[in-house]
Amino acid sequence: MKEISTKLLVIGGGPGGYVAAIRAGQLGIPTVLAEGASLGGTCLNIGCIPSKALIHAAQEFAHARQFGAGTSPLGIKVTNPQIDIAQTVRWKDGIVARLSGGVGALLRKAGVQVQRGWAQIEDGKTAVITPHDGGEPVRVHCEHLLLATGSEPVSLPSMPFGGAIWSSTDALSPDVLPKRLVVVGAGYIGLELGMAYRKLGVEVTVVEAAQRVLPSYDEELTQPVLEALKRSGVVLHLGCSVAGYDAQQGVHVRNARADEFALPAERVLVAVGRRPRTQGFGLEGLQLDMAGRFVAVDAHCRTSMRNVWAIGDVTGEPMLAHRAMAQGECVAEQIAGKNRRFEPMAIPAVCFTDPEVVVVGQTPPQAEAAGVEAITATFPFAANGRAMTLEATGGFVRVVARKSDHLILGWQAVGQGVAELVAAFAQSLEMGARLEDVAHTIHAHPTLGEAVQEAALKALGQALHI
Ligand code: FAD
Ligand code: NAD
Image 1: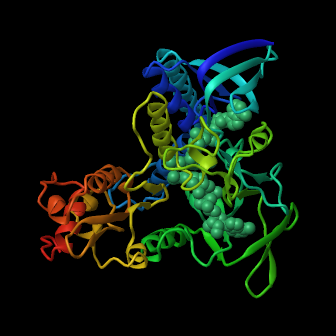
Image 2: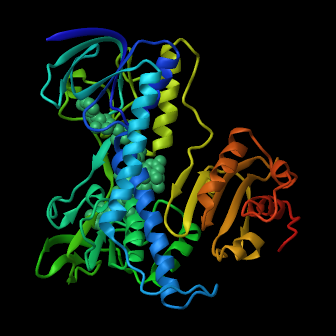
Image 3: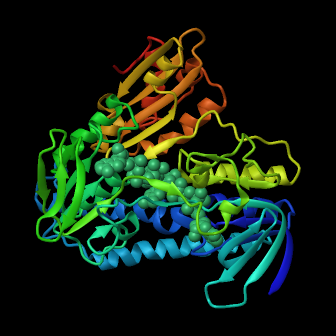
């Protein structure tokens, strides 16, 4: 077997692993990256990017259909809009291919040696990579091992993936659009993709075990999403569990009173969470400390074994691409001898439903639970001129600040396009901004960002436009 030695071996080429490898290469660390599937990992190939492409295509089609129905207040009329879903999927695949190729180019530029194949860990300093093209396996000896193996979808025992039962990966590449889709789970994936399918003209029903949609967010924030779901004709069964599927009757559902009923559907998207990828490649042999199902790490992303590091989804919540990337950069810099810790003030979360939902830092219930005396102010997009010109007057921006000194603790927003406000929110938290800092910053007019300034003004009792 071919043997190579390197300073750093990264297992997994998702946002965590590829960013770690690029930064390590930039810092002059000899680095090998093993990737068994495609560079870019879940995010780029079967996650963030393709889902946002599909959501955009669905939104464009929904506009066309509204124009076709002659109900647009803008006076735009279109005759008989159609969607060729095979072409949509090809367009989405083109974006994925460009980005995955781009990651390969960035890794080459940084001098990283990419080994395409599945890595099998032998010990904390050795792994064997078996190429999927049948080539000769390579044994890699390293000083530092970085685990960035990501996560995979959780399946339900009563409805294993395959055939009519879709994982998110299947839902991102439909060959045809089903007439009826049942979505199990009203979390990130269920609602992002469920809403997109509804816009594509599919009859969508969502079954959720909790009593609310997006149960990880507070109710005030998710109310506009709930209203939008109802308006669009998505049928919701909250507080329900699923017991199985058959092609004749569809999905068998049980409600809180234990009544059973069936929901007919040609396809079922199961989106009930993801689990870390920790098995099948020798990780168990390292006997690392675990945090539940996840690999336990400290504030340096160190595992319980010296010089074995872990980042991204395999290390736990929040399972988000930007967290994985930030951890990857942090680990590479530490291996290069820099004094770094992974201790962000906040990790932003964005749910790309329509309207979008953003959470950065503490929410009012979280501030209360932490025993902080806080001021909260909400500014509605209904009072924002730009929102009116975009037909996007639903939703609001909310700020949470410490009452004693006005230190901003958190921002939340719900509305069309609010994902792009995250940069301002996260910067204000990282920089320790106070309400006055944001309130006295000149925000360009007319922009949705003025709602951010107005929320800060309102918290100070000085709102101008409400
Ligand atoms: P991954 O991206 O999962 O990458 C791990 C890589 O390791 C994979 O490529 C895998 O093939 C490889 N690998 C695993 N084991 C081995 C082995 N033994 N040998 C070689 N290679 C191996 N997050 C966001 O922040 N924003 C979003 O909008 C968003 N949308 C999403 C939409 C969907 C449908 C899904 C499923 C996820 C979404 N996420 C989103 C989550 C995001 O994709 C993950 O948080 C992110 O990809 C985690 O990065 P990672 O590097 O930890 O792991
Ligand atoms: P999720 O945790 O967001 O939502 C899962 C939902 O399924 C929850 O509401 C839960 O109550 C429900 N549920 C669980 N078991 C159930 C059952 N048996 N029957 C009915 N409902 C059930 O998980 P997800 O939507 O699968 O997404 C996985 C992860 O991927 C997310 O947690 C997030 O980290 C990441 N992601 C992020 C984004 C984004 O950042 N925009 C988008 C998609 C995915």
